[in-house]
Picture 1: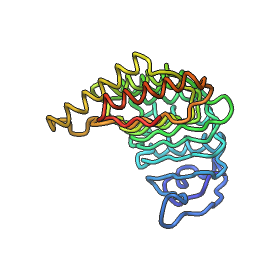
Picture 2 (picture 1 turned 30 degrees about the vertical axis):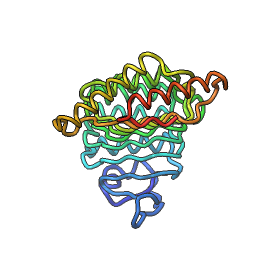
Picture 3 (picture 1 turned 60 degrees about the vertical axis):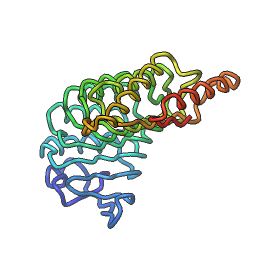
Picture 4 (picture 1 turned 120 degrees about the vertical axis):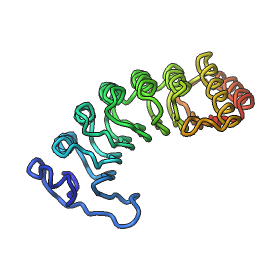
Length: 267
């Protein structure tokens, strides 16, 4: 059941869902809050069926007010993400800035559906959270599709979280190459607890050097308003890696951090 609200969502089409009041939060949205601009519904038991009703309500009202949609730690999957992607393609999520879907059961299929809509201009995301998907989870397929969206959608995304997934060095390289594009403003890339094993690959090193060069140029010229000035990359606690290889890999990452002090690499 979706949390009830007296905002535009409940007015849009209350008949499509049960209007059970789970409570508006007072004060901090860390406890969950509902308003015309913010739907912060962590751990509220939201399902795919609820999400389809939400997408219908968004379409009915064009979703123009909605800026934050946080559905982490629920039970939504690819059907939910496809519904949101359809709303975005129809122009109903143009104002969306933060999308939180961590702790659900989304797969690469759902990720690709959202990335395609985002790539085509369906939203102007600043924050995207996709960590800890249950079941099959997310892999390099998702990372590659998101990288294409980051490159095509231009400079809006600043924070991306895909921890506790199945990414490898290839997925990391795709994301960093997108971040190295001239229009990117990506500043935080959190990929902890994946399978990014071994020394940084040549594409990864090249992309990080380009990002560092861009950051140095912006700092020197002060002519990069809104553009990327630095990057925090977090790749702690990778799993499935061979211990001896990881000792050498850690040394290589440390050397790269020393070479590129404008970047912050946590490994």
